[in-house]
Length: 230
Image 1 (cartoon, rainbow, N blue to C red):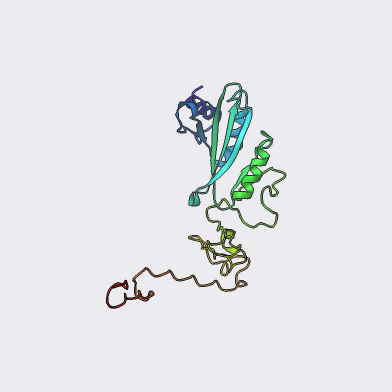
Image 2 (image 1 turned 30 degrees about the horizontal axis):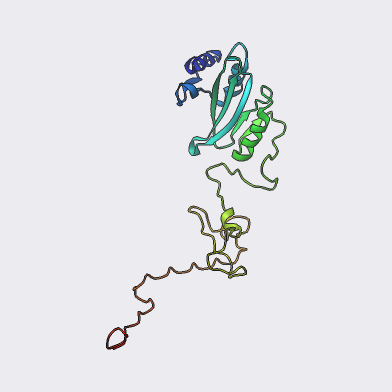
C-alpha cells in the first residue's frame, strides 16, 4: 500500500471524525503515513494499527516525544508491518499540565522501555505501565532533561574538564574558568548549591592591542642614526 492508503485505512478503522491522516516528507522510499488522534483515542488507534483486520502492524519500532512548549507534548509511535512491508506513525498531543497517556505495553510489550524513557526524559505518565522507574538517570535526579525549559547547569557547577592553557606547567596555576552558556543562571543563584559557592573570579581583562593607550611603550631608536658603526 502507498503511505496515503495506509493512513486512510487506519483512519477508516477508527469511528468518528477526530482522526486525521497525512503523509510525512522523505520521498517515495522513506515517506510514512502519519495519523493524528486525540489522547483519548491513542490506545484505540494503536490497537487498530496492530489488528490483522486493520494494518497488521506486528512490529513495534519506537516511541518518543517532542516538547512543543505552549503546545504541550507530541507523542509519536512508529509501527511496522513485516508482512506488508509498510509502516505508520501514530501521533497525539498531551497538555503540558499533567501530561498522561494510556500505556500500550499490553499491545506491544517492547514499548515498556520506550515509555519508561519518555516518562523519565519528558515527565509524560503512562497509565497502566507497572514499572515507570528510572531508566537512564540516577534515582536522585530531579527534573526531566529533554524538556525545553530544563536548565542544564552542570557545565557551570562542575570543574573545568578541559586541558590546561598552552604554556602552563604540569603543576601550573590552575585551570581556565568555565564560561557560562547563554541562558544558564549563576549556580550560586540557582540550583541545589545556591548561596553555598564562593563568588566567581573576575574574568581577566582582555590584552590591549599593540599601540593602544596604556600599552607598553615602544623604545625610541638611539640618536645619531640606527646604532650601527660609522
